[in-house]
Image 1 (cartoon, rainbow, N blue to C red):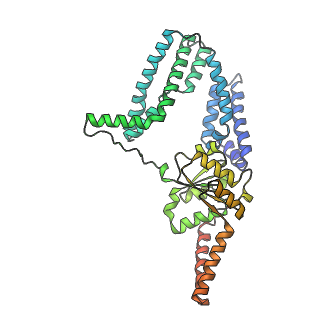
Image 2: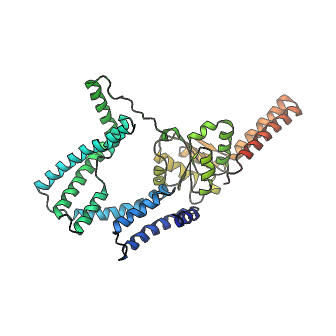
Image 3: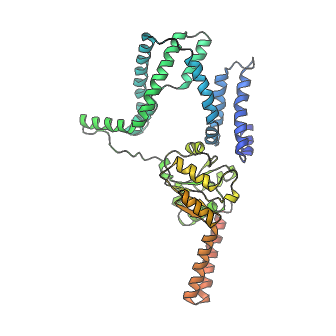
Length: 382
């Protein structure tokens, strides 16, 4: 509670150090559980370590970085469980089918009914029930522990493994058609009673309101927030920033901008950071300030994760801008070009208006606006 937040905050400046620390914490908890006076199994210790890490704002980064290590050990775990299954016979498979039907029935009572009673829409309850039809892998861990302590026999573990396999195959295929299933249930309810379920596909959520995603946060991103705060503060509620600089979190949260810690050049991390489909993705950090990645890589990763989004990236020169456009960027920012356009606007106004007084008025206007924005956003340092 007191040590880990300070340690992780200090290590948040280095993504690699964060990964090493998170794994070290998990192994430390596992080793501690083996001490004779602790009396906690390694499986439960690993769960406690994961729960502890989930309380920190770095959970999306952890999930993305340890994905492949996790999948490797899960593969070994399931391989070991599969080797415990004897030659399939009719009785355990039939029992597993009955248990699977019972699980599906209680899913509707335990998830749909609970969501509906708490004020959720029927669509939310139905989709949540369909997506959570399977039993957890942790059930297999508990059964393995129970078998080791002699609380259950091998036949019970065999049935649970078959239940897990049946529901996993069933739910993984059902998830792809969960909206179609909801449409069918809604149609059937309207045929039975006049006040049936709505057939609308869209479910408004708070997460859907944030459809502008900033990958990285540098000087241009800081001034963009200042422009929004000064001229269109409502747009701040539509912004989310993914960045590994933890020091900007509080200033952004005070302005209504959602902050997520993570490596924005990793597709796995981005999938955990933002749930849904953003409409606009912006990378305002030039390649000269990026470490271990580039705007081209960020563009390709963003196109892979969210192919329908409009992506804006940053270039240092015309050649790089042309390369980014060829790679699929919708717009490429160039600081030099934008500055030249502003100077052209000023000088062109001076030429057409032919008056120094008008030019001075424009200078004073821009100066006042920039001073106001600088005063309002001086606390945000990047």
